[in-house]
Amino acid sequence: MEYIEFLKSKIDIAPKTGIEISEEDVNPILKPHQRDAVIWAVRGGRRALFESFGLGKTVQALEWCNIITRKEGGQALIVLPLGVKQEFKRDAVELLGLDEPQYVRNMNEVQAATSRIVLTNYERVRDGDIDPTYFKAVSLDEAAVLRSFGSKTYQTFLQKFKGIPYKLVNTATPSPNKYKELIHYGGFLEVMDTGQALTRFFKRDSTKANHLTLYPEREDEFWVWLSSWALFITKPSDLGYDDTGYDLPPLKINYHKLSDSGVTVDRDGQFELTRDLALSLSECAAEKRNSIDRRVAVAKSIIDSEPDNNFIIWHDLEAERHAIKKAIPNVVDIYGSQDYDLREKRVIDFSNGKTSSM
Image (tube, rainbow, N blue to C red):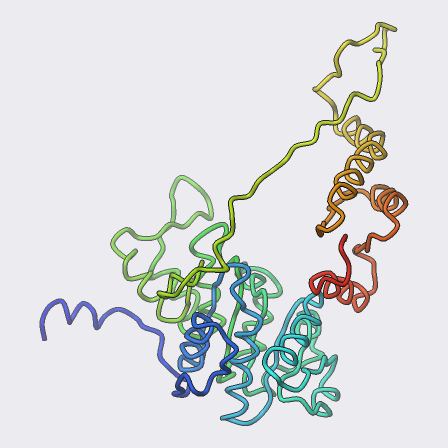
């Protein structure tokens, strides 16, 4: 054996534990980069899709579940934030032509479900209402909850999902903070023990507590190992395909400066020609409250000037939401305490063009 081949043999590579499929097994509605990702993930068995926003992770996860349950039998579970439940149902039916995935809250509902793919939220799994080991395949949507090794969610999920033959994790934000966060996905997928991966690839920083950095001599090996079970895609051309439709124009920011709300007087009774920029936290909050009507008026004028365009208005304070709703009666509002089903319906309606302002 050549020395280079010997060294290569020492590099850990995630095993392929899935099934062999071809392009003909994948729904033709998928884009080329989506098709390739699904084929790679099905063949691998336990894999991660780290793809930028807008590349179609939802339809890929659904087709991955569809292929596995069609060929291997059983049911597939997709764990997701409740806010995207309707998106998964819509894409399954309207894009892939599948039966609508049923949302389940406990194992009785799982066993009564007629769809091969079922949906639930993270809290149901964490609290023990759903047993993941019942399923042939599981997919985690927005799986960034796995980043933190010490979190209750990660430690709970590590045990609850152990031994499941097919696992898929999907997120656009796998490791915004540190490289070592990436190995936690590997631990969940059971491609390598998390502690073993930490010891193999990372060294402690003696100058900073709890700070780990990659061994320089192991960096190439780390990325080879990572690429054997995780697929990173920022745009279709990463896999050799055309970026048309995905190459967004540069972001343009238009600033709208409010006029001063009037002359102010300091504590000594002197008129102030300019506003004091060194405001305390409470003074900043008061300034936001006092300027609500003027800011909403500017927002309304922008919307009124382009009646054929769609707009999303972000707000911080509840008082701002009420003022927006009063000034623009046809706006559809979404807020934290709102009923989940109503919130999802409003988001879907906006994305489908049924409402123009949100």
